[in-house]
Length: 302
Length: 292
Image 1 (cartoon, one colour):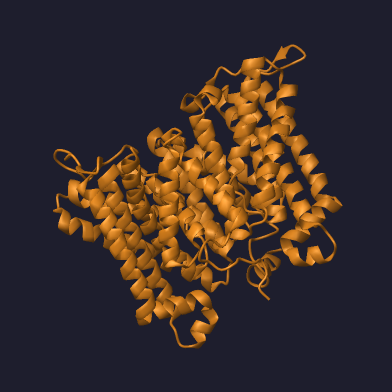
Image 2 (cartoon, rainbow over the protein chains, first blue to last red):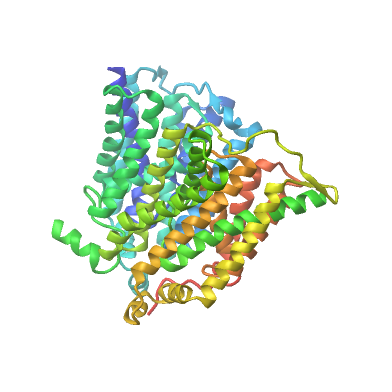
């Protein structure tokens, strides 16, 4: 039972982080592979504040949001000047730099040994320690994130993001400051990713840099793409699919050493297959295609 | 100390140049980011390991065989995934996402079949390096420098003076016009994949003789190659060499003052600076979002 709850908690955490990436990749069309870095920044902020200053979660999570947002601004401002594959490379570079800091700045982040013993969060004196209470805690955040982002993407702001994705030049010609909107989207995406990082740190109570690698970024991106870019529900479905199915491998008696590789092969293959046969993902409203071609297919399916 | 850093920079620069060259050939011809190149790179020394250590073949047979296998993997990826995708008229970003998927699959196949631990192609006692001006250099490191310089010249000549090279440049600059002029663009792209993958394989085998191999070596190597390509300018062979050496010098002399774990960070900070101030590199054309 605890095992099932554990999976559900992970689905919630990944839903939050993939919904936040969806704002960038799905709605604005910015293919970023740096989301594990922001997820990690949230986790480390929470862990460091909880361990060194003993602060409660309702300070730590907002602190993570702010730090992540500020770093996102500093990164996005230069990298948003680049386009397409160059943007991917820039975010890739940022991801490697963050990992390198987490791994090498031993006196501050604990280096490869990580930060153990993160205290459990408590609300008005009630400790959140059982799996059930954790699930409720995490689910609350996931639902709030979904409602917030859903409203935001239906607002004029969200519509401008979609317009940028469809045709950037045209949106500029309507008098919209495209750079400012992209920047805002990037900051919102990164800030929300940090929430899921904080939740992850509280839940696992031990973090080390290996949870925030480039492979993790690619995994989060795969969730968004496979679930469906430009659809928040798609990210939730994607998280559930990409976390549940590999867990099934345990039940067919696959040894743990191979299971980790099989999990990655599974989502790698899925990513290739989706790109070949259904580039918009399961519930997607958008594929990374230009005029004609792919978009025609999307219309046919709809 | 200075001489040793100089020699280290030249060795690293040579490997970066070779990887940059192999990536640049594919990137400039196909115009999409072939991430799986990193996995093709890793496959080559593992094939060599399979043939030499497990099957017991002599090195002079197993190394060419491994390089050919590497080229075959490149061809296989192109034929089974990229070509059908191109036929559908997809965009570079979809190809990029597909290649990320391929990279993940291939890398995990390697670590599943060979294990995650470090493997070596070297046998017998490790010989002490030669001493030149107070710096040490091993024979394999000398081989790295010579082989990359030779391949650089060969590729440059190939691109310049052969029919295939001209066709590759034609496909790179305008695929539609190339097809209209009677160039078999699919064939040219296939050849590019074979050549690029073989070059990456050669680089990987040389590196693995020097510093052994792990299943994840490819991603890092590829990224260094990409940084070199961007510094030098996409599509330029001298640019790849210049970028590779600049990067190697910055990394190796950078660690004079700070710890060597920061080499990756140094490389990517240089990359960010270039993307910010000179995104087209030294020899490249300016990139634009719109081409009217």
